[in-house]
Length: 81
Image (tube, rainbow, N blue to C red; front, side, top):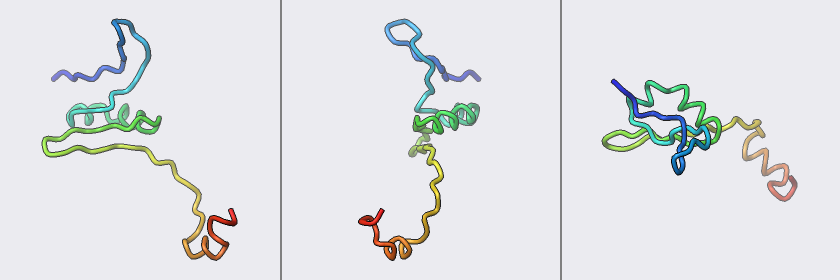
């Protein structure tokens, strides 16, 4: 079974840059999961299409735990940051 995945973007017939497909059929996403996740990590949201909907894959970088909302408000909230 052949995939329609092509990591090269062609504009006006010339190869311009490497890019990662942003929209995938599920079978292609399963075959190329590493590429899909790397693209999401690089800031390129990826969509996996299903017949009845779609999945959006986005990478969210961990942030330092700044404590609870109560702690935040006790420190004065946004006025004291």
